[in-house]
Image (cartoon, rainbow, N blue to C red; front, side, top):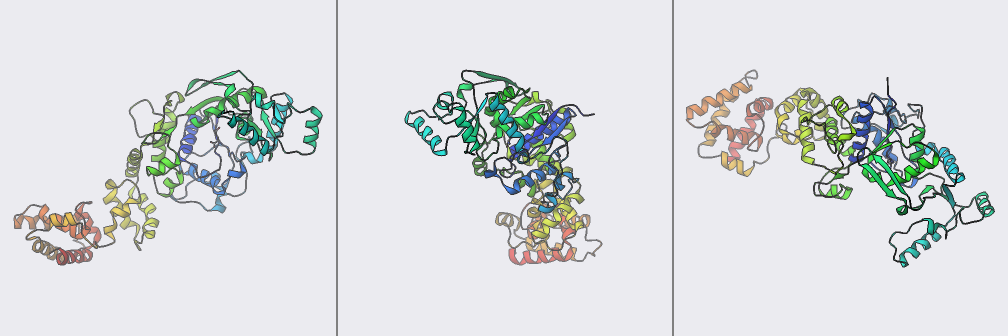
Length: 522
Ligand code: GLU
């Protein structure tokens, strides 16, 4: 049976989902599942000027990719799918945004479909004296700001003092207000922030938090276009959707006192709140888009997805950005995270985004995957990279040979390029070190002996034995022949198991490469 714990992930579709957004979704998901509660997805799309068409689909795809499927939310075809489309791909627009049919009974889950509700509550706030209509034009607001500037006051505010000098339902006679409203005069609804009060609340992460109302603006609740601002819509929906815990990034902490006032004025119990620590750049400061770019860190979840990062690795990594299980485990599956997740172990201080650590998680997850599975995912990439008509069996061998040497799936294609393409040149240092007096002759001898092998016997143990015998005869060290053969065949001085690689390349190709090296390096 599910508990009454209800949390929501409430992204605004103003751009591609950021890794910080995915962490917020993850913590909400883990908290919900830990308490056997409900994880709601709500799309906060009331700011039509910043709406980005592809953003919603991006949110759905990323959540499913990361296995954080909401229990309730706008039900598109994606949300109802099993979520098992191939890793590293995007679904098509049509299949994604199919007919709208919400899952859950608290919908609609897109705020743009709930505007009437916000009007009802805005009116209730005005009627109870906690909000008011403001008719100031853009120019009048600008003139007000200018007055602040000339008075050397750095923060122009629509506060009790300003309020008394502006055109609103608190300063205008009642019949004038009625007339303006009846005439459809452009207006907004503002929250009447009380003066001289301290708003306090207990945050589950930051503990006791307090804000002075004197620092707050009379927040716009309903905009001139009839759309609510984030603050009104967020509070109304959290209440109507019976959200018990609001878990979100620290950047929303300063909005919390306005929300607390709204709950109070609407006569509602506020949910518990937990503000998650900022994600910091390794070089210091908040990991902004610009900083991330400078440090070469992708910030959009889509980048990781299309770049074939392992979703389990990104999720594991993000879980640790501000939280830990309280013991020394580093690799946790989603069910293990659910089991261990509590908000009291979320840190207050910022969490540093250590990209190397993410790669380390990625290697770990990738190595745990079946070779055949990785090969299957690699196949379209290999084709794209011009690997030609390589079959899955071949790719499976490539995967097996290189698995311990790469951090991400596409790296197989870099590290394994020599399996499909003879070296055009040789790494200078390695060639110089490997190719010495007598090398050409020894390589030629090895070439002749392995050329005599049949298809059945051109296998790693045999190839190794022949080389071992030859170095013994020649009374030289193993490396004296192994290294030149490696350079000749792969172009570089280090790489995966040489004999297995020769076997995979096949007799003809190996002979061709040895012959070419003898000519070029001899
Ligand atoms: N729409 C807000 C966002 O984009 C939601 C913040 C909140 O969770 O209250 O993150």
